[in-house]
Image (cartoon, rainbow, N blue to C red):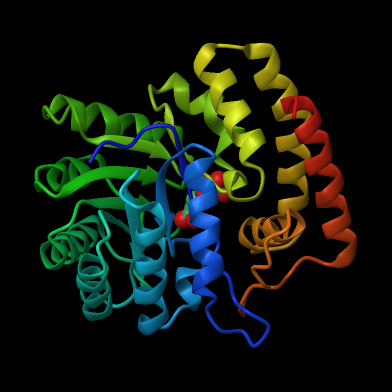
Amino acid sequence: MRLDGVLFFPVTPFDAAGELAEAVLARHVADGVAAGAGGVFTACGTGEFNALDPGEYGRAVTAAVTAAGGRVPVLGGAGGTLPAARAIAREAAARGADGLLLMPPYLVNAPAAGLVRYVRDVAAAAELPVIIYQRGNARFTPEAVAELAQVPNIIGFKDGLGDFDLLQRIILRVREAGHRDFTFFNGLPTAEFTMPAYRGLGVTLYSSAVFAFAPEIAIAFHKALTAGDEVLVRRLLTGFYLPLVELRDLVPGYAVSLVKAGVRLRGLEVGGVRAPLVDPTAEHVERLERIVAAGLEIAGT
Ligand SMILES: O=C([O-])C(=O)C[C@H](O)[C@@H](O)C(=O)[O-]
């Protein structure tokens, strides 16, 4: 599997009764693929993996796989207790997913050796390409990642820590071990904001939650970044991404719930977030609306 372009992390829609709204998810995914997504990561952080039961998870993967129609790879989130993560991995494979994004283990802090075992065990159950997610309590060592990169179906590493010293060490160690095709990508919240720094380490791929509600802005940013249009990159960072990040940082969990509010603002009825996340206040939604309007203007749409 080759990942390229803007990686789309759809939200998971719920209806007025709070139930999974598969048809709306299918529409959201189809719109994203039509807008130029390079890959779809369904039921991951932005897609409230933490809030879905196993049945909902399977239905969400089916909806995303069907809507993408083989045009781009579709990956599902995986995680939780080891038995649950293995079961989820098998479910994703049965539902036709092309790969998995493996979340940090639930609740516990573990040493690198334990993280290696967790990732290996889930990867063995899945028989699908697996991307490791470094975030929170899942902090890997360079040796651990180099060891995992030897496993044929462990194909990449999503960095959600933003520790550049550690990431540089990991990249050097993995490349030195000869894993040239092992993929690294920036998976920090609002990843575009830190892309100039990641590119300094040779990491050009990133996930985009903004793409879920403002694909025009996310694509304009990606094109500007790729073409070396520093003026447009800076204008988008200053006029759109910075105010968005400032708003995001006001309330824990806004990295997800603002995205869902943004999708609603753009006309798709995806409902609110499930607890423990909270939806943005009316004042914050108005602020988000102004930020999106400014971003669309800068992006020239
Ligand atoms: O698992 C997730 O949903 C993420 O962390 C990816 C997001 O797309 C993140 O990179 C962002 O907010 O741009």
